[in-house]
Length: 180
Image (cartoon, rainbow, N blue to C red; front, side):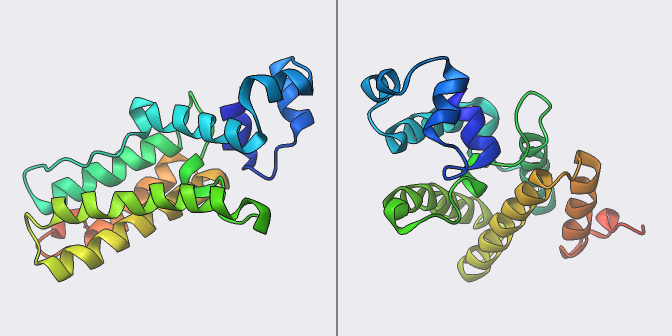
């Protein structure tokens, strides 16, 4: 329950009263079981990142375009899943917070940053290192943007349009062009 609240409202959008009400426990029980709200958030974040649909293990497909399509479509599926909340807890849960929670925000940022080297390593199969770095940054920016769009109500079909436009810019990928 805590994971869903944090996912839906972000860290600072959830109060201790929200948590205890949803969990059906009193504040002293929450503190005894989890320590601080930040500790509970860390546990909820770990539970979120342990879910199979939120695992980030990009795998190669036959071509660069196929690999990028799979990566983006998997991300779009995850942020619009009917079984969960929309958006991504890692992308949006702690983007802005008070100074008192800066350490927690840095922990979440480290998760986001940890995706970059994995993606660079994958892209180096097709791209020079410098291009792989830039393309990885672009793709992660696109995936985080799709998470925010989903959080704001964009459906899976809308995210697919974003994917198609993005793929249309890949060299040799004329079949992916939206107007083709």
